[in-house]
Length: 104
Image 1 (spheres, rainbow, N blue to C red):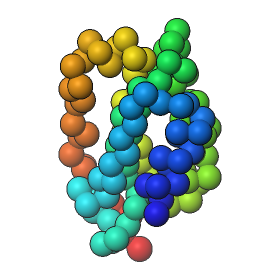
Image 2: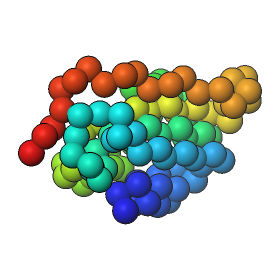
Image 3: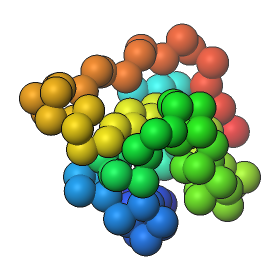
Image 4: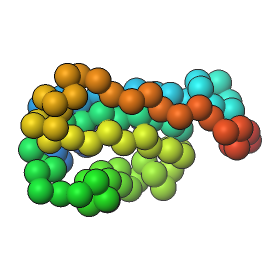
């Protein structure tokens, strides 16, 4: 359910040409069924002439309610259409969990 909320908000705010939202909570030390760790791949011309920090701040602002709630981490991969074409649809894997879980 949280994944769908994230997708909807990002589609509305950034009108992406490409969007993937992956729930990676299973890779972390969290209770079963948690929706707390996500990887977002978003391609939008909204990001043209923006540095990564500004792109990430825009996404954090859009998802402020989710981040204040149960979402613990976002792995953000933000691209313009031109950058995305240069990657040939290749996205880096998220890092492994370092064991600092939220068991409770």
